[in-house]
Image (cartoon, rainbow, N blue to C red):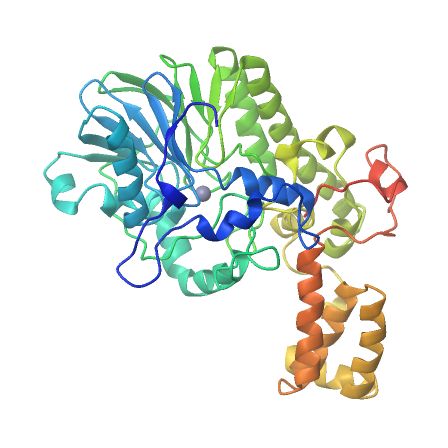
Length: 476
Ligand SMILES: [Zn+2]
């Protein structure tokens, strides 16, 4: 709440139809202090923080609108006009965020829009802030990191159909908000409901550490391609002693592999960029901001956050590599890897968005690809044929379901979900199999934490959680 100025009730952004584009009201259930039994308490806390919305003063001339979309809008007051970093994901939410700012600050036109990276929650609202005609007339210029348009096309066009379909599941778009439904995405509350817009950038930042003065505001652009996005940049504002870490440093463990599907990310490079930012700008920074979540103020706290995020991605990369070089497969590495105690207790290292398991598998994918080296997995039967044979060998669907019910009662939800996958693929009309499978997946949603009893492959000093099964594990 630091720097809070004002908001509008429920952060309501109406749409043209009956459903609003954005509204926080359905998340009021989070006001209850105690976590619901169906939600991991750590996620509950994150969901409460992500429900805060409004206009915030970061420092002199630097403002943020948060909680009006899944991402943040950062507004820098130039000498004559505004510099807006990121446009939120939809024109409607972007316009509402700008209106909130304008209601409480002296009115200035937008002179510059900066796209921090190529994900749509950072550029999709641009037509709520300006028009193609204004941009063509040179009234508003749009800056973006090198490779921006190519990366947008890669994500949103080439694989766009599949990726947006899968994103509906990743972000729980069709789930009703509530303690048994949509609680949070980890990065922010939810996805807004409206089309994504785009205006191509007019000015590309293609030199690392490019120093520019835009309308009286000094900005150092640090290019970080191939970290959280293929085209991405950090920004440092020496006048304001503010470091903008975009989406490379947030208050969650991010994704090396995002389950909506996307090219796998390089944890080693990501970590290196954070380290470089800390070394280059750390001493000159009093406040770190990002395009999700809240700022951190105070030089020591800034350095602490950056160090831990740097170490987080480095650890996942290096330890997954160590295990894959020892011959372990993705599922085995995911089952084994635990964060060291120094990171396990860190809020910002917790898996509210990415998870340690997905990320460990991502490292394997990056270096070795999808094949785990077992020739039986090189060219197996496709899912339907395989499921029919499997269920037949297991004594038929009824026998499989009967045994799965016993395992469900014992809490073996991961296995029940796998067994019911076979039953459903062998016969999609089998309602009992579908419902038991859905129940198992629902329980996994309620209890998102690693199963107990996983055996450590080796006993390195960082596997403390393995030795204490009651330890509050961070991964969600
Ligand atoms: Zn984002």
